[in-house]
Amino acid sequence: MAIKRIIKHLITGSAAVRAAFPAHALHAIEQAIHEAEAKHAGQIRFAVEASLDFAALWLNQTACERAIDMFSQLRVWDTEHNNGVLIYLLLADRDVEIVADRGINVKLGKAGWEEICLEMESAFRLGKFEAGVIKGIHAVSSHLQQHFPKKSTSVNELPNKPINNIVSGRLFHR
Image (cartoon, rainbow, N blue to C red; front, side):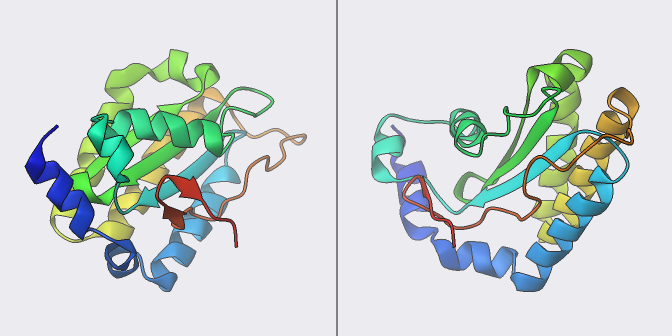
């Protein structure tokens, strides 16, 4: 357990999420997901969390482990063709994780997702949060388009609205 990490998480609150992703940015991200999903049969979700709660920090939970938890809580795995993808950002750690369901993950693998994460993190270091997420959505979408082309029977199985209302590890639906 790193004291520096705990302090960073304790001081990073929901105001940091609102500063990085004001309402107009969340709307633009939702629109980008909507437009991307019009080109393929895959499903994309975006979630941003300010920080982890103390229990998760005590257990030294990583951003990757938390992203997997969110993947499950948001039911991104629950798509007909197992082609859901979660883009998760843990602001306190400045860490982006992409968790993909087995249908798309076997086609791309960890290295492909990591490349997208690194590009997004690069934009975030410049303070370009909205642009970084939208760039990540487009990159994920291009892979989904290649492996899961749009069909006339394709439906939107998951909400496009970004998740940014996570408090102490619990989702609050408004």
